[in-house]
Amino acid sequence: MIYMNKESKSKYMPALRFNWLTRYYDIVAGTTTRERTFKHALINQAHFESGQLILDLASGTGTLAIWMKLHEPKATVTGIDGDSNILSLAREKVKKRNVSVEFTRALSYDLSYPNSHYDRVVSSFFFIIYHGIKK
Image 1: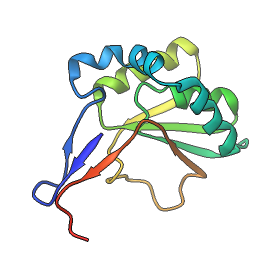
Image 2 (image 1 turned 135 degrees about the vertical axis):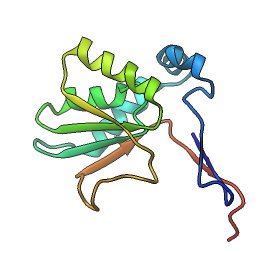
Image 3 (image 1 turned 180 degrees about the vertical axis):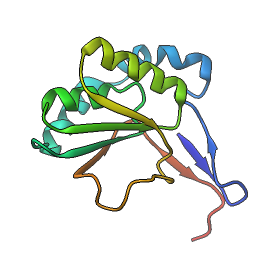
């Protein structure tokens, strides 16, 4: 979750709000949500194809990115997240699953990719809350 306001461009909040909870992220997500159901529905609705470039925005521990790669092995899947601790968990998971997914530390509002670089951009469990912005 990212909080944005006028005074500071952003204030990053790690997954589960506190760094010490990061190692429990998969357990919490798996037991408090219908993660498997909605992530597989997202994958099916995205209609991934061989050769596509796919971005998992705010990838967390990489569960969705891994499942996307397993669903379409000939796609190139990249995950980005602002939390280096959670990305370490994601990288461990891809090694254990022996899948090819690249993870990069980045924030959603400051990406270095050119427009239309990716064929699909997906996300789950990601929210931006704006403060102090007048309509």
